[in-house]
Length: 172
Image 1: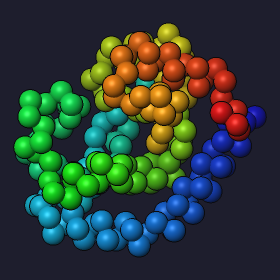
Image 2: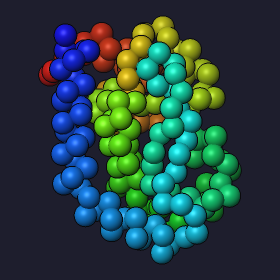
Image 3: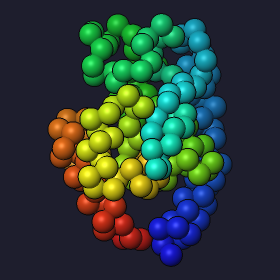
């Protein structure tokens, strides 16, 4: 019951409230991004969702428009050359993730769950299959992020995601 109905209701209500409360911050960030660099305000990227179905994750654009889009930033050679002035702040504070509230509202993501993998991160997707972590909606934040974010090895990240799936409840 919790996994199917209550969690979705909580996600919907909190994301709707978050969107309303944070709308002034959204507006300020949108203006800053537009003044800081050329290109759209939002960045869309193909990610893996529940049951390995693809969706477009939304983020505030933090990089120049000529940046390779299907590669994690930490895998780019000299990624700093692509990051805008506003982008440095947005990334440091994780405010670039705020538009994912819209993904949550639409039902593509949850507030808590495994972070959505890039469509081409086959090693992470395969490892998560072992722990059924691809069977639930990806989240804005999750157990693996709390325990190390991108610094974690793929097998450790997938195991932590699986721990969340196994123990998912209102309190975890």
